[in-house]
Length: 178
Image (tube, rainbow, N blue to C red; front, side, top):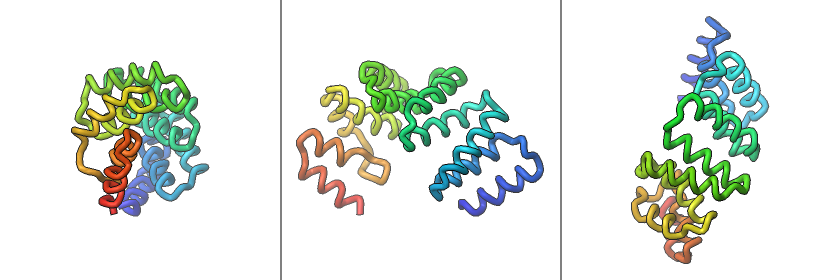
């Protein structure tokens, strides 16, 4: 898939180098191969070309969180929220970044909002449980894990279960992940 995406994005850029979405696609390809300098350059180019593109700001913010650049991520999440004010996925990621930056009260308020928008969305469940644990809302983390999908690669269920005292259950879930 990534070879086809790379070919298509490069072809689009060859035709028109001002296509922000093509630069965003290239940036995400660089993430998959951990080419962070190229990822940053393509993302910044996409933002310069189309500063009102929600997808660029949201994608860039998520990756900045993974890179530990939480303050920068929060700036891009804020811009994304200006463009799409009511989106549970964005609200959850913003809450996660706020939690990482030590703003736990704001993180909790945000995750409550994300859960009110869509409490069935897997990232909302995962991030909600992590924020719940970090902010002393173990009951919410436990409730979210009760409705969480079966364990998969994108699940925080083993971590939450173990943190809430179910170490054996948490380890069984990790084993089941393969």
